[in-house]
Amino acid sequence: MPIPTPKKYIADFEKMGLGMFVHWGLYSQLGKGEWIYNQRNEHEDVPQTMEEYKKLADTFTAEDFDAEKLVLTAKNAGCKYITLTTRHHEGFSLYDTCGLCDFDAPHSAAKRDLIREFVDACNKYDIMPVFYHTTLDWYQKDFNEDFDAYLEYLRKSVEVLCTNYGKIGGLWFDGNWSKRDADWKESELYATIRKHQPEALIINNTGLGNLGKLGHPEIDSVTFEQGCATPMNREGMEKYVAGETCMTINNHWGIGAMDFNYKSPKELIETLCACRKVGANYLLNIGPTAQGAVDSYQRELLGVLGKWVDIYGEAIYEGKPYPARCMGKNFALKGEDCLYFFFHDLARGGDANVVAYRNGSYFGATAFGNVTDKIASVEWMDNGESLSFTQDDNMLTINATGFPYGMSTCVRVAKAKLK
Image (cartoon, rainbow, N blue to C red; front, side):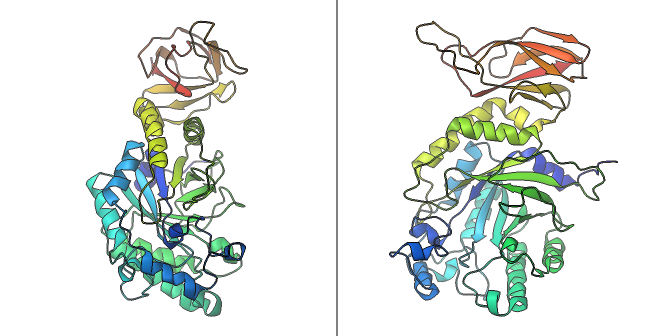
């Protein structure tokens, strides 16, 4: 069965490859993650009622929030878009709700429309702004008492975002999984978006238990929360739908002051590669501090990822899934007139007194099956070194030289020009 042609804005999204997720709100002041109000009974020092919790707005100054620094952090990491929590489950909005509710940034100690600053910075540095918006709301009583009234409030909130900030990249919803059997009136909500932002991505997170699940016909990308994307079979689909993996940089979406479990640069690089192997984007989350700064560790960790992307970004942005059969985690992507071969666990060269070959590390002849394109030359993208190879029918064998001493990029990419 045929695979549908993606709409241009969906195809453009797929080529972006890497995005930065940002979870920031009133909960950031407590330093215990973004779900802390839901988990409040476990913490005596956390507000126990919403009336107490809402007072956090009185100390939410956002004095450390610098939208340009945030955007440049993403850009330096190789990200092409940022998805920011305009409103999370606590119900507090970082944008001016224009009278729908006074539980928003302009009515807090910040006295600013923080989403306006964010969008302006994105536009200045050519980063696509995407708006995360909760559909679950712990603040609004109507969520439990008058669901239809709540849904109209939600729709009007989204309409504000669609009409007050110019062209936006998309809306990323989260929370429908909280009432699986409810009528969320998605068609009305999405029609509002299409009316004002016809080329905005519409994404609705299906949650931890439904990775990659297709939803409403207007959805433009499926989600893989905290799980690496799997290949999508688009044969016979009425519409081409993209895929996106969203993952935390540690164990929490919002900042956790006592969360030291940060991922390594190697894990970030390998996850990005695993996503691109199946054509999905990698949306990597950070949690700014109480008043909006990106702490130095997260910033530097993203910077290391950005150095890797600087070297191999052409393959990440331009490469598309290719059906080569490879050993281990190795794989290939197809460019416009080339192939990109991704090598994991390459050994490092050097004197035997300083180099240890660990289990699984290797260099030398590496085979790739089902390579139907004819290869003219192969070279490492990082230093231009030519690699010898043989091709017998559809079997390609590349002599993958190991890392020279003083270098280890975790995943190394070779570019093969086609005949």
